[in-house]
Image (cartoon, rainbow, N blue to C red; front, side, top):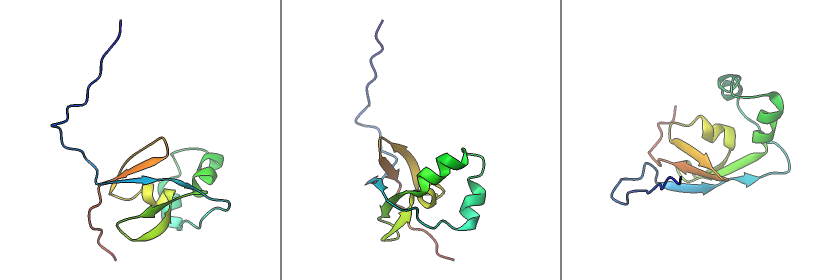
Length: 93
């Protein structure tokens, strides 16, 4: 038996930007606070692989490590190398 899934076009989408993930040769520096937040999500090897990925953030207008994007309140999901972002303004401290 087949299950047919349809996306209702009248539903509002929960993201503003679709940002491709960029593979890097070398890992980007990630602040210690973010490393602490991510301790439980996976192994060291997995996290080190994620450090070698980046996104060009349309909200901050700069390139960020994917891990920084992942902990951002605008992060919605990542599917097949594309990050979905709410695109809301962030308060800078």
